Image (cartoon, rainbow, N blue to C red; front, side, top):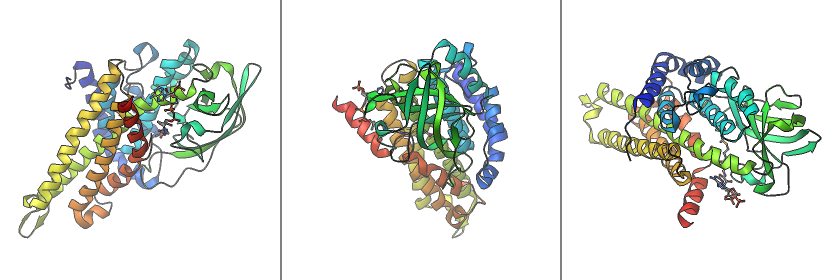
Length: 378
Ligand code: CAA
């Protein structure tokens, strides 16, 4: 498999890199400290086509595919993981509407998403009582004439209080995955309210909220795909989303390796830079090996997706490996920095906190293993 980037992919990656280094790096520490929301950065990403990297150009996207998307997300995550998660979910939501939506839905929802006019997209699947067991969701959508009325609660919704466009999963039929449908709901729809943003360990510059639906009526034209098809839409969305988390983890590992290499060369102990010590060298070497493997797994899954080949297993492998590797790398980066790694004078304590959620969201490491095992036993 060829992992070199073509001209378009390189241009997308370079545009993301420029924005990341010039704008996102200087904002990242303050965004984390204040727990703000990267609205301005999202607008800038939208202006470059980076909120719809794989969305076709006629709908306002970059039309550049899954590999370019992964490459761009790596750059953004290296600069600011909080911004990268809002970018990732927005791309995921826009792609699902392109894939399963009607022409009217594409016109109405995709353009504002990819331009940044909708601020962000959100993916409302998890509920207070179910995360891993997504098919156990209880939110209902009852048809009344030409409308569906939604009732229920969602939990852990990235950008849920800021997103202009939210895909919401709700039960239109009986128990289990086949009773679930997906709806595209706009911010401000009566009956939809966002709860208090969570106080998180990391990704503090991204917003995570519960959502409550109380007699929230949407038109039948907001049903995404067919009735009862919602669970499959969620699963295939998550296949792509997991490539995004792999890419986000790659960004964090790169950031750790860069910061650790710089520090190890500058910091002296026992009369020489700590980079001369085997204990430090081995950590840097392990980090570099993890980084190379993480990049390859992520680009492999992205290429399969782009070629229209099955990629469920490879996306879960990338997500599993990269998220575990980013937790190793961020922990070792703190170790290399010693006491300085524990305070915010250096960015590695933020990387450490930001990496922690990666083995949890978009499917825990345990769920990835379940998916991988299911695929190899098929
Ligand atoms: N693509 C398409 N269809 C799929 C699929 C896929 N990848 N995986 C499963 N399906 C289909 C199956 O073929 C099956 O279809 P039939 O009914 O026609 O046979 C149906 O979906 C049900 O599949 P399973 O029996 O495998 O379903 P399950 O209940 O056992 O669940 C699971 C499988 C993998 C555990 C799934 O529930 C899962 O992925 N859980 C984790 C959920 C998750 O990742 N949540 C993340 C929340 S979003 C988030 O974090 C975003 C954010 O904000 C950052």
